[in-house]
Image (cartoon, rainbow, N blue to C red; front, side, top):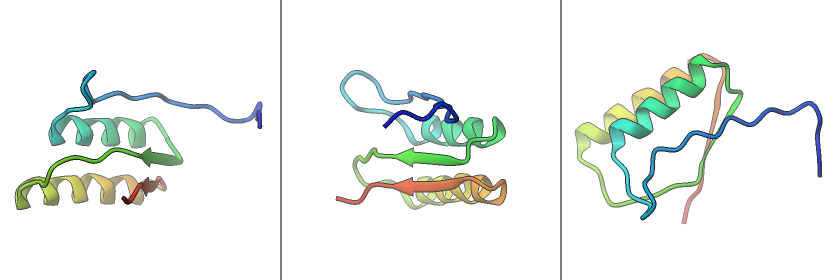
Length: 76
């Protein structure tokens, strides 16, 4: 349906092939949370990450959560 009370912030960090780097994902999460996003839909996936990348991504999600942003991730 259509809601006139919703705003969508489109943030892109993946290239045309669907590839990207964790640091750009983190930047997008931090940007959205700083701008007041209430929900982040993370319907993206990719190859395994290093433990350091996993930790950095977790920390970004945690920072967003502390600002009141709900992080929704697709599983599959």
